Structures are given as structure tokens and as C-alpha cells.
Image (cartoon, rainbow, N blue to C red; front, side, top):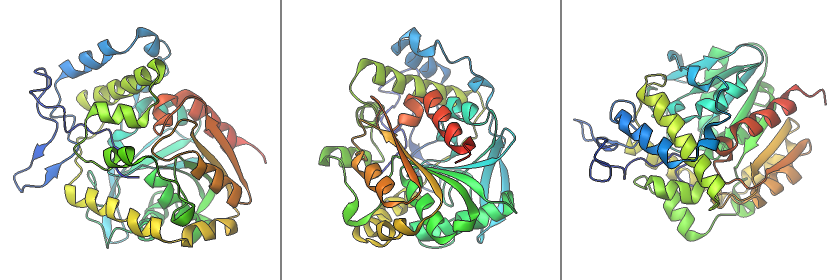
Length: 344
């Protein structure tokens, strides 16, 4: 499982005369994977909206246009974390996927999740506006960093945690290493590591791990090949572009060094059974949820995790792929809220 980030790099001025390059080099030669807000012209928004059926936008009047990520900074784990919060109520921490800063969360999903709770998003160390990684990128280490971050931004009571894709690796390790920090856990489109992990076809793995992939590749790997799924993928991209262009989201970048370190951390994860074996000892109430048509992280992974954890339930989102949270944001937010609010 490589990049979960929509790969903007292949959209250049040559591809679309209405936009500037979406990937380039800073003065210090650090390659930028995601630098959207300042580098995309408003014309791209119109391009993407025009390419999706109007019906996709019929239910977008749910307040997502009002979502703004007002970034803050806090010192934790020997570095600086950039973060933002929306809504009020019980705290829900979101852990994003490989190479994905907080400015890649779907504003429609955030708006729906934040209706009755405090939602926290942040940049992993080395990404976006956060400081450098305190040590080598390993998911156990990242769980420790996140726990230190939580102590600063939500001290006292345990919080709910949702980890998507690679963020699910960090979330599992957080539950293993810092169980008292978590009230309830949501594991979305992730795998358990080791021999139990089931990978997608080779062409999907290669496309998913390519930091210079295209939007076409992102849509092909993250959404099923149906007209509805593809149009909803484009609708998500349109919302994301809109949030970055109008300044609702911070201007962020993904240095190649950090991206490669995150991808490299997946090798020992897949080579060790330690995490998969530890799942049986996690007593935290857990929702395991994934797209029924996910080809990046096939549903067999979620079935394994749900079967291994003693207090887990499984939901397969019909007709959805790896980016099911963005394909069906309202449905997913409803399922997550129902689980987090349930008495048992």
C-alpha cells in the first residue's frame, strides 16, 4: 500500500492550459508532491465539475463549503505538529494515509463527522506544515508521536481514533502501545501486516506507490470502474481543489524524502507478524470498515482484522473502492457516528 494521496503531479500546463504545474521543485530542490492551493488555477475547478454529472452535487448542501482548516502548532515528541479542529463534542482524531497531509481530507466528510463531535486533523511529522520526523519513520514510532500529540491537544480522557489506509497501521499500533489513549477505534481500508496482509494486483501496487501518478491513475485504483463511482471520485477531487484554491485549506507540500520514508516503512510492516498477532489482545471496541470493491487493500484484510479483534464489527461499503470515505462521505460519516455513539 503506497500513496493514498490523489496524485496531482501529472497534471501540468501541457495537460491543461488552464492550470500551472502541480508538481515542481522548490529552491532547495525538494520535490513537491502536493502544493495545490497556490499552484492550481480556478479553471481546474470548472474542468472537474464539468466532467461530473450534476446529480453528484445534488446532495452537497451539507455545509462542506464552510469547512476551514485554521491551522495551529503544538510541540510534541520533539517536533512541531500542525493541526486543526472542527466542531464540538467528543474528540475524534483522524489519521490519514501515505503522503497525505490534512489538506487532503474531503471537506464533505469533515463537515459530516464534525456535526456532533470535535474532529482533529493534523500533518504527520515531515509532511505539510509540521516539523521533521523525530526519528526513522516506523509505524510503531509514529504511534508514539501521535500519542504525545494527543496528550497536548486532548489531555485527560481517551479519544476516538479513525485511521485510513496507512493511517490504519498507525491506529493499530496506537491501540497496541497506548490502549488507554483510545476510547473507540475505526480502522478504514487497512491491513494487519505480515503474512495476513493481502495486497492488490501488481499493477495496482505499482500505480499506488508512484508519487508521480496521474489523476487518471488515482481514479482507476481508488474507485471502481462504474460510472457512478468514477463521477463521485471526480466530485471529491473537485471539492478538494475548491477547498485549496479558495484558501479554506492550508498550502502544504509533501517532500519526497518523507514520502519515500513512509513507503519504506511498509516493508518491515509486511514482513513482520507482530502487529497481526497483537490484534487479539486489543479489547478496544472497533469498527472495521472498507469498500467492498477495494483493489488497493482488498476486503480480505478487513475481514481478518475484524475476526482477530475480540470486540470488532465489520462493515463493507457496497460498490466502493479504497477511497470509500470520499466516494460515500455521508454514508460513511453516518456509519461512524452510529458506531461511536452506540451504547454497546
